[in-house]
Length: 142
Image 1 (cartoon, rainbow, N blue to C red):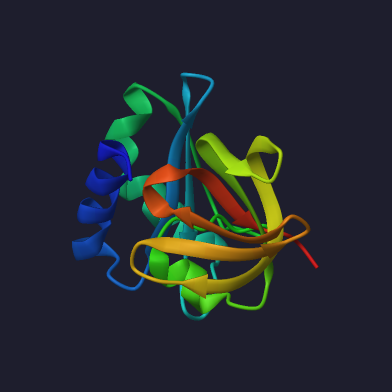
Image 2: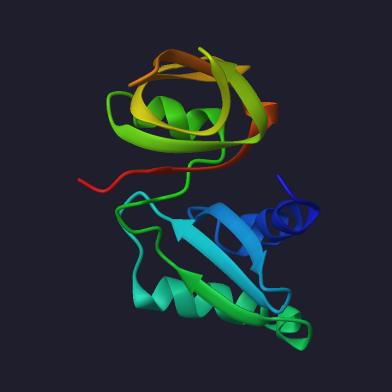
């Protein structure tokens, strides 16, 4: 998790304790994209409140706050556990040895999620990827 995301999570914990920050990322150097979730779903009103809570960040970034949609990002072990049995795409920071060639992108069913790694049932077989090696991951829309 980035320092920026940790800061945003901490700030929202007091003002919006039921809203979870799924991912906060800077895109193209100027756009801060924040994906949020809520047990009852994300509303436009929630996005507006989060935008107001993060208003000072608009001095440095254009700010986009939205729901994750069907291809929601997976950034924490709890996210992977919650969506066991669903299809996901996981991209690693470095190539991982798989069969004859190293790979960085894996797509398959989430079949395991310990505190250290996620396991996918992919076309290449069972792939265990340590969370520290995950660059980006998301569900695949159904």
